[in-house]
Length: 113
Image (cartoon, rainbow, N blue to C red):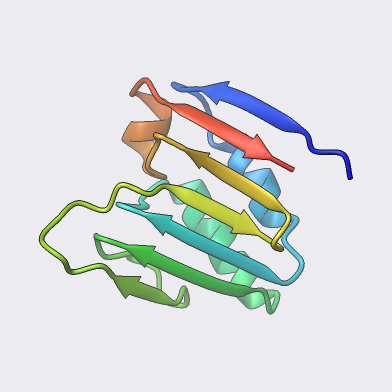
């Protein structure tokens, strides 16, 4: 098995994340403090419509009608930030999946395939 690792530093466009989400065939699992990046939300909505099993755990609400979401309501902050696509591609790092975190802050993202 060959493992490829790509390191990305923000600020950046969300296009790398979106392109992976749009290729999902059967599952997307996400754990993060927050998601509000419109292109990521649109990709998740599209995945649900394609029949992909999408599951999100977040500490903040997700304003999208068809994306299954569980809110982590503990008093401590949710630090894990990961997307797992089809149980073979991991997107993990210090960036939440928000416009601010991806496009205006300094974070790191690892894409592991």
